[in-house]
Length: 358
Image (cartoon, rainbow, N blue to C red; front, side, top):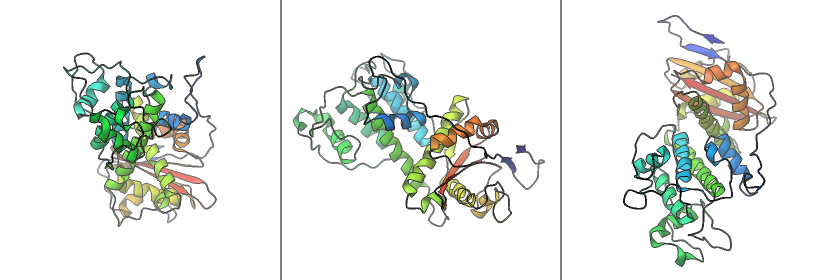
């Protein structure tokens, strides 16, 4: 339910949403066509499905995974990774004479792509692996990802164009691309859709990691998922929830929310508290919003959604969106920032908390 306090009241408005009933939702897998190309290869399937669940893969690329990806298609992936990973839209544009594709224009605006000369981009041409590394290297620079530089160590090094050798070396040294087998890179071959999705998912993960580290405060009691042996996995789940919240808000024209490290800390405290008392009332009897006061966080309004039991970000997000009360809370237009906490209880149960503020 939603409670609105009178104007001028000292307390902030609060949204109480509580998910207690278990919901069984089956994961959706890609469909199969007669050629089998709509099923990702075994090595890629898990990453492809995760990337789709995070909203990183446009519908147009959710098929023919083993076929070459176009230059425009790769730009579409790159834009999703940037906008969802950073939680903000790309407003810059660069026009090309042979395409009006907005994703191409956005990547051009960021300086990630520069076309093939004479203001031509060739959007429908297949992308080669060496071209992909150049785009990824520039994109990672825009995402503030620091790359280790090294010369490529592939046996077919001499076949790599001189202009691409630096970026190929970076992708190999940083574990983004490992070649096509037998220590070969095959720089001029076609780059498949599933290869594009998997590599972009790696970049997304690195970008999310940086977002969690950039605004950290060593004096903040981070609670929950930061202190456990499996903290990296739980931290990743929390980051995935943040991305999925913005995906759902984008579906209905809502603005993207900014992830806030201090709010992540507050949500982590709430997730941990829910092991002993699964309620919007805290174990000490105070209202859930008091966690903001503890961390000296100021807000005009605050909402909280909780859940316990889901084993993945995709599952908890689907449960929230299947609940009309939770969905209404998450999609309120006024929210500006969010924080997510995940805590693993002594019995292995995962506790989830999402805090939203204005």
